[in-house]
Amino acid sequence: MNAPQTLAEAIGCLSGYDPDALAVEQARAIIERVVVPVEAAERVAVRAALGRPLAGDVVSPIDVPANDNSAMDGYAVRFADLAADAPTALAVVGTAFAGRPFEGNTAPGQAVRVMTGAVMPAGTDTVVVQEVVTRDGERVVVPPGQRCGQHRRLRGEDLGRGRPALLAGKRVGPAELGLLASLGFAEVAVRRRLRVAFFSTGDELRSLGEPLGPGDVYDRNRYTLFGMLQRLGVDAIDMGVVRDDPDALERAMRTAAHNADAIVSSGGVSVGEADFTRQVMARLGDIAFWTIAMRPGRPMAFGRIGNTSYFGLPGNPVAVMVTFQFFVRDALLRQAGAAPAPLPFVRARSLGAFRKRPGRTEYQRGWLECDAGGAMTVRSVGSQGSGILRSMSEANCMVVLHHAQGSVEPGDPVDCIAFDGLV
Image 1: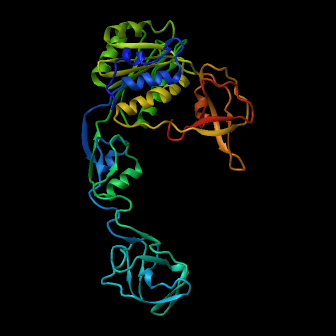
Image 2 (image 1 turned 90 degrees about the vertical axis):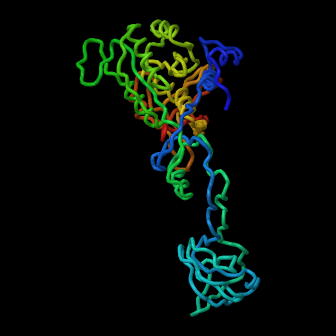
Image 3 (image 1 turned 180 degrees about the horizontal axis):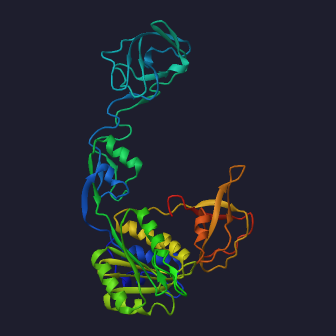
């Protein structure tokens, strides 16, 4: 793993750095160089590891499968007994079940009835599926055309003893739970759960249950952030609403940096609004204010207070979600000790026009589906204003219009990122 860099060092690695027109990939590269994984690990019960990054490689203590076994219901035979161009009659001498092996050896001219998962009887090397044979009392007739070793799973074929089954940084999902259980692990070492403090800023914000005065709005960003943080499996620390006051902001920042590994705030980073954040962070840590060449979500702050990373997101609700997903998500996964994979693009045919000028990345809300012919299509869900949170609920994907790309016409291919499992 690369050594962490200071913000200045990370910025110095980029050519053409312009904080007033920073490309999306440049911002992501700076963040990746600065965030560092938490070091602490703990052993937990396998079920409690769901969603957690592994703290080290998991090495298989056994062969999987532990024995050669049948992949199908049928008959275990010796391939050498089978005629190449005529049916072969064999004597059936017993049955092997999963968990109840056939005892004894199989002599030439004999076959054993086997069920899926049953250990291959001694002396046999091939399974003939039950659908193709003819049973005649205690004999089975095997047609020609079989292949040596067919429908047989070999010992260690899935995983050999002493080989890594899972690598450090892998987030444990349902498949990994099953794999760990199949290897006999009751516990596994995972990274300590990342602690993330989050809050909103603004005098106009009210918490649920409070009355709204003139110009007031309910704080929706904290609830959106809470949902996205929960999806990442972190310990989310809700610090409420912080008023537009430098002393209040500094207290919040100090408390968050003391209690958390990362801080995510919304609001207070636009031009003319960032003065308090700039003043406070100048005293507490290291920060950069960016105007990112993207839409929505142009203003963003990123920095560090000691070992605590800080992400200052815009105040508009859609911009909060977009900047979180394309900047904060991977950074928090990396800080949690995971190895985040790039979000997969789905290529789709646009059913309408998307207006866009080159020189910035745009994320527009869309609806992705298969047409009658099985091809992927996407359409806009309507207004793309960064304050229209309803549109995120009505969409099922983000249409990604890349930095150098221009407008899209109906029928043009576009890249999309599906929301499923993401937001």
